[in-house]
Image 1 (cartoon, one colour):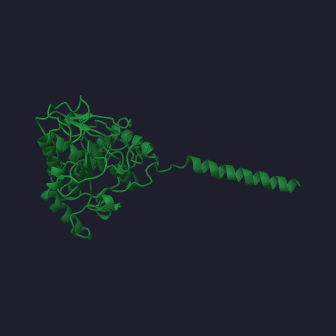
Image 2 (image 1 turned 90 degrees about the vertical axis):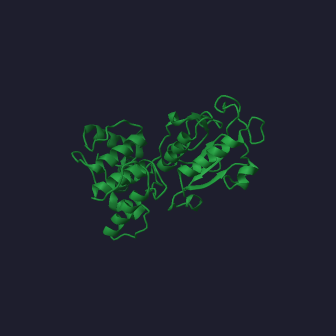
Image 3 (image 1 turned 90 degrees about the horizontal axis):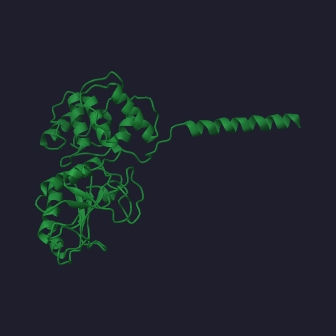
Amino acid sequence: MVTLRRTFLALAAAVAVVASLLLSAPANAFPGAFLHAQSTGNRGVEVLAIQHLLVHHGFEAPTDGVFGASTDTGVRSFQSANGLGVDGIVGPATWAKLVPQLSAGASGPAVRALQEELNAKLRLSLPVNGEFDAAVSDAVRSFQQHAGISVDGIVGPMTWQNLVWHYDYPDLDAGMCDQDPDGNGTANWGTAAAIAQLETAVRSFTGHGPVPLGDAGFEHGGDIPGHGSHEVGMDIDLWPIRTDSAQCTADRITWRSPTYDQAATRALAQAIRDAAPGHVKLIFFNDPDLIAEGLTTEYPNHDNHLHVRYCEKVHPNSLYDC
């Protein structure tokens, strides 16, 4: 009986130790995190990071955050030199070769890539000087804790993957006002490319007042009340433009409303497409004229907002694959 009791106590202790280890082990807060594919037509902090990383590896690239012809050439040269498929798409295999392990004391273009990512994803203002100093180390540790991964201050594959995956927040000063039609608060997060492409479109759309931004997504994606999608950071709702340019202060309208400005809304839809060539999957909006022109697509319950769906050349969900 004593032996049985000792066995039971030993087993209970072992279970407690295992449970303690499981609870203390870092759990990835972003289990679906992956390295967002970037290619010609994309823009944003991921593109900027790729450009800095190409320079780090000795390849020429601009550092303007726009994936244009020069960046495409640099990517293809890098892929060729590293025995990768030469397609100009920075997918998982190319990302894996591009990102180096970084830690305190490192310097150079790869650290600039890291600083740009940290600034965008944690909404910081680190100097982009290429120096892995104490401020960068603190920011890396904060992000690792935020992501639920090992907090060691070392930027290895897991940290890079979670950092590149993490969503970005738009600069509302680009010419947007934040609307909250479904009570989801600041659900304005999206992939870095989607956000940068939206900002570029809005900046080019002038003379009609600010663009009303409805829901995009939560900071880490996932189900969002009032929507059947908006879970992967690549769906963004915008409200149509009014003839009085009061779309940020007056009631929301539909394409049938007398104050609906079709010409301005058409210009907005065109600006969205122009800012992301090859990376706009569709725009749901039920104005029949814009549908006939190929600018938008009909879909139920989209009379009063434009639902922009961005895409990537390689994406695990076919709905978002260009």
